[in-house]
Length: 353
Image (cartoon, rainbow, N blue to C red; front, side):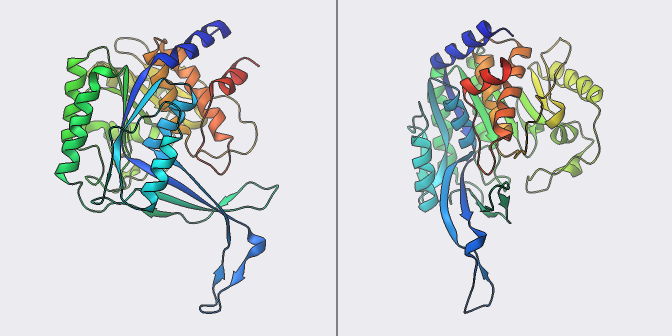
């Protein structure tokens, strides 16, 4: 990719209209100063004093945040939050994303806001250390009334979109946004609008999804190909790969998946880069950029999803989209103690130093 081609792609992002349907979380960081530790008079246990609280959109919300950072034109989050304090913070954070419209985002007393609370110990110049995370999840199925509203929002938005991202990350299957009915609505959109770019990512399984552009990691690839079901926790949390998967094996598997589904497939391989393939074509492997210091992988997958989708919607070739995605991931993993985002100028500086 030349600098001129990079600039042409980036400049076209501002004309694109994208929807993101899925599970939106609040990423809430508690910044803790260990020098201020106290002991509770009541329990005798340590008291960790929080000196700062930072909130940002997480999960599907972080994809929206990355799309905005890369200069997307108009963004429609399609999902829900609770009528609670966490929901207030999530809505505030989403409103701060350039180009975001919350016309199709629901706030409802029937759901709790999906929240990751991350306590971080700060001892400069060392990198922050994350303590045990505190999660808030919905543990019962999403009410049919909410599902129907999201279904209607998708159908109304369809004609307006250049691309749609489907993000399945609910902590409990059935308690989030991506239900069979929502997947059916997405499938109908692809049939009614064949030029619509639709990319899907799921912490549970893409096996139940209709034919879409699939993005997965190596562990999810193993699960998808029915040889690694044990790598995913029943509640959907990602786990480390049980064994090293050969790049050659993933290249061949990606080609089979793309041919069967009739859509491109992307498989991220962490420090080994990314594999991508279009139906009928050979799989391509793009290497990861070198690590430039300490890293924090939080949000890297969301940055890849955003960059891939924008690039494909802008008419990029597969290798161009993957190059942008790897640059976005490289920017994000070097942002410590936060849910990272990557901006166009940062990608350009990495790719064309």
